[in-house]
Image (cartoon, rainbow over all chains, first blue to last red; front, top):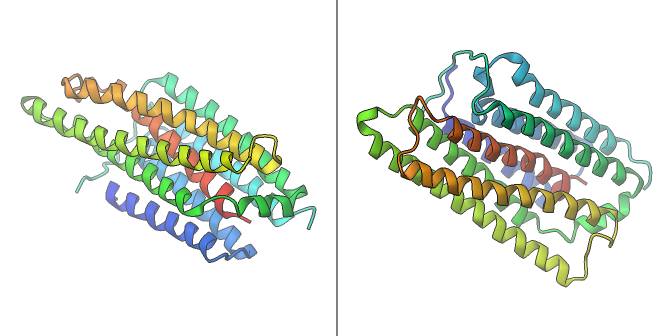
Length: 86
Length: 199
């Protein structure tokens, strides 16, 4: 499927607005924490693939930002799902 | 509407050195993001209370600003890469306008961030107030410095583009600056929900 940069821009705006709404409406359940992590991954991947143009290059270059997003966001998700103090 | 074409290339766009910088920056910020998340685990109440002092709306506006500026840069790169040499003047002027727009948005980001910092400082908040603000100020000031450098880079790209300094065959410098700006955007995309939203 051929995507336009305008489509990518629109998705980034919609996902950022939905993240803002989660904070604005104070929706802080585990479900919304996961939603924020996944939507951040999608946004990061879109920037890496389409804005940085890594979608068109060899996989080894494309994989580094993807791995970074997966590792960092997974560790953040684990830390948020398992707090030590109340 | 601009279209993204798909054909595999052996190397990423821009100078290879920028990609070393990108990976080092990702690693540095990644450690700070994870450090923030794990410090929060043991100071949950203090982090949640401190987070209430931040302005989520300004954070969101700054997110929109960086996303939009990144989009403008993509359009600028595209304009240069698809230009016909007999239309070099028109294409360069058009690309320089995309860059000017991105630069103005980057400057607006800096102004908004300065107002946010000044608001916190007038409340007596510093790096040593608590662990949350230590991470908040460290991450956002570090990112602020990156945006400042990005705006300087965009200004130089703007001047060279306006002087018709780039062609489709010679636009590596333009691409390198663009990659740096997208890095700044990528880092903020993670920073915004982590610091302003997630509780």
